[in-house]
Figure 1 (cartoon, rainbow, N blue to C red):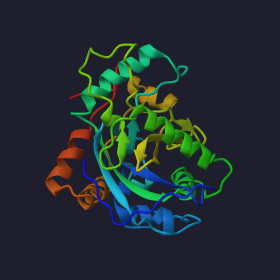
Figure 2: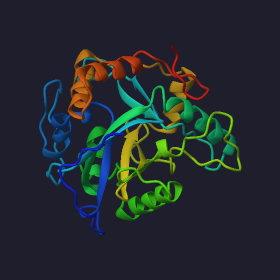
Figure 3: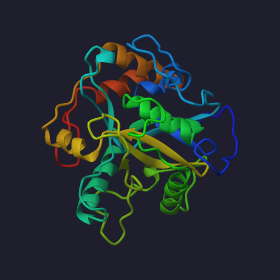
Figure 4: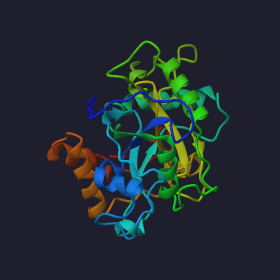
Length: 294
């Protein structure tokens, strides 16, 4: 795991505007210039419209990188912004069953153990305010910051999610990080209902209308005790990708290139970035464990 820091501040308690979190980007927002459009407004090459920007337009002074977390990255839908190509989503191996369904969670964890060393996901973590994260969530779902149809995460919820992760990874801390890669050391077959520890943390929650692509907000760990948040499609749609009802779709050259540039910004060589993307582009999801089809 690589960590890069340009500044470090303690996180004040209080409102969403005062609470700091980390936004974990895995798609085009890995490129800093692209992500800054959601904070300062405007567009970069490849975008077809300007973003309104966040209410707080301050750009992040700190970022980190988490490599190869046990989540499945794939590309899907057809984005008019990116020439009809697919855009990035992450499968956190959650489903629509009631929380506590041990059988499904156990199956997911066995898959997580495999994926950690094969097709895990790399993230760039930007330290921003929770208000900024909520504004990015709204814009990624075609809404303006503050739109009531996008249910904001509160500072109370963010602290609760962080506490849950700190309990799961209570004894381990790698450069301030606590995440799912730290609780998947069991080999396949050794996980039982008695010793099972969820490797993707607290369940996420749909915060934008279900017809939006990125309405499902998820906490994937903590950094220096602060909540690490991202978003993907909701579990109902994810199950359709796993079953094959919804097809995956390779990204356009422009979208691919933006992610590649972003990965290089985080410290990968261009060869490493290309290998990372090529291994994940063009694969499908199947019902059992969202394993890649090779």
